[in-house]
Image 1 (cartoon, one colour):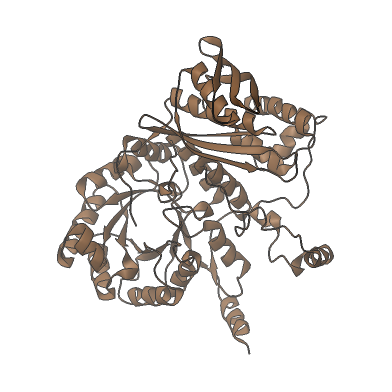
Image 2 (cartoon, one colour):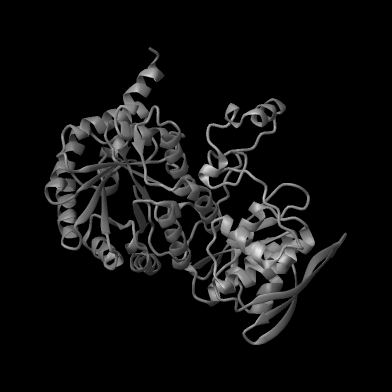
Length: 524
């Protein structure tokens, strides 16, 4: 009997073991360089995570700033279903802020962390090991006065002494920590080491505690290490949509879920994730974070279900399973081509959006349909990804400033010049300005007309679909004083898409929806 056959017989003999999914997109994912989600955007992602079926949403790090506290609080008040967790260092101020953040949640959790590796204890904390244990016990004890559900993380666990980890975990478990997280904070370990570490700890802790893994991808092993942790005894995985996070990112939620789902013959584990919401979740996080998904990204990348090789195409035509180990519909991607054009009516438009998973009210449909007609007149046919981009770029931020028309003048030997006409709270306004290029010129003209002058930090443009008539999607991040705002725009004309994205930033700033950061958030 071959090894895979032996594994199959072993895993199918029992029911799959349920694995909890803790999504930390809104906390660790938001610590990606250049990402600054405001509380409205965080709430939108949180509602999508509910549809996705995650067990725990780590909503943020409340002590970091008033904006982070407000974001966690809004999610705790408005999101129902998953556990809502807030991160805190092992200190009174952090824990009290976390408690305020989750006090209105149906199922609140406080997640405490302190470093346990020799290098972190010596160089960062300047504490002896016994003092670290004492501080951890005090922190968990305090947190238990606010909530019943306390998670404890030993930061940099994979570079910590195993016996010391056993000591500190046993002490915090005695005072009420019920989930114990073993993070590979710097992405250093390997699957074999991870599996052995969890097996070691599981044999030395009470049976009632839940072990959790939290892996970073510095060596490209985050998903493999997370799976190894489960094989060693972990029953919770901490991960992010699209694998976003500090440095090289975190374990990718969609890759973990589909590995368990697709290889049930090897992995006798299951999650509560609704796989058909994976692609929609990926698109939403990509748009709001401003981080594009690489084309060859597993599960959700543009090329994940694409076949260009003639041999592959021939095989897929005859039988999809020749080159596809899962189908596109399973992760929320339509295999059939969805085509909409300028002759399509509102009913067909509504149904198309509904088929794509969007639940929109009449006012939203009316506003989007006008934009759809304009794009269809200019582009011709619109496909599923075009419609997704159209909806995803739509913002519920009040449109205090909206673009009526614009013109660009440029040529050999002249500096590009932009003219814009806007609807503003004070009526129509016009402005002319210049820039080193057409995009910069229109940004400057919009600043002049609105009276708001954000400073551009990041600018990204990508084609939504392929071909010369593809929609361009523009995502920008800009700073205005201490406030950071993000905006998106879509159009066949990249300059117009850029103008839409910049106006979205201006509208966010004017509505007071930008994000302000005051405290560094470097954590496990």
